[in-house]
Length: 405
Image (cartoon, rainbow, N blue to C red; front, side, top):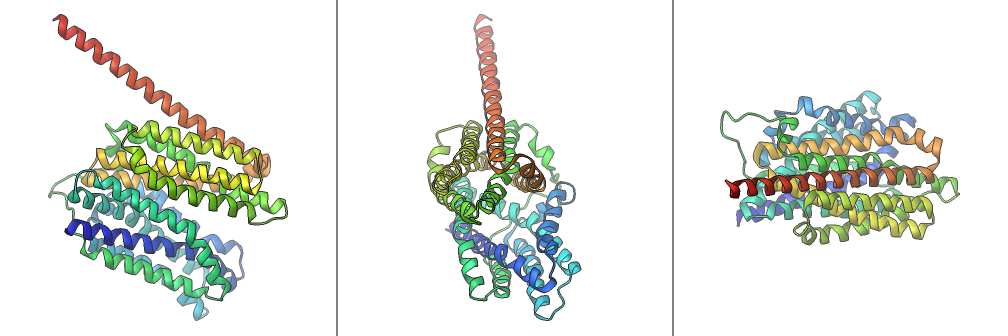
């Protein structure tokens, strides 16, 4: 079956590229630091790459609809691979400059803003052609492969760096991104009919309040994520055990998220998406609270696993909602919007996280971030329950009026 082959190609390409991305997260700062001698420059590519994503609701409205086939996804991948390869190539000839880093970061940001939602939309469209309900399954598998990369990629990258293969890791990711694009070339186009309006993210949200509620829950969790990633690093540094606490939390999170991804397909078929996402993220928030109260590596590992499990289930619920309630151009716009929400939320959290932790302390910040996440999630859950109850009452009144008439 062609749809199955196309789905495997998209999943394999995305999985390979995402695994290689974890190499770059380890190697890129080291290459930049060694070549420029500037600590400030180490985050230049990553920081600049976030700008096109944050601005994508304004510039990418038509561009994201252009990425509607495998060959076009491959074109975007080729540009991203070129941007990635420019850094190790310039380093090898001694021409790595801040200007080149900015240009590379911008190209990567533009590519990610188009390729991430584009690949997800193509995968969902392929699932629709495969059989009913398969779109959600494929998006869940995509998330699961991403989490495998999160769990195994950094360790593999660190091991490679320890053997001296630093520049080589950047070349590996460039090749991996190019291969991912080539694998997608067989995926057929899902073109809208001529004259079809190009929807904005806001327009695609109209009539879909559940998607907005899901984004509020997930976006809040992304904003508060800094308390976990940055907070645990600072706790370890202050206690003379640098890296130990973050390693415990991330390892537990990775294991839990893999279990959650595997279990989510069964759960999301039995529970409504927004209540499920709300309960899941509220549970993750409580895990953050626990980390702030019981800051030992074993406790953090266990609570990190709980957070990973619940977040994986919650994110799958929101992806199911988008896949079920939209298609074509609207689905592509909504997946783009979801990418903006998660990336923007994480960027805002990391930007504000340092001063907050410096003022409150890492442990108190974890407790506060967890409580905020839980309160927002439970508020959304309560609001959805109240709205559903009101609809049921209205339906009952209409039914009684109809019978009386």
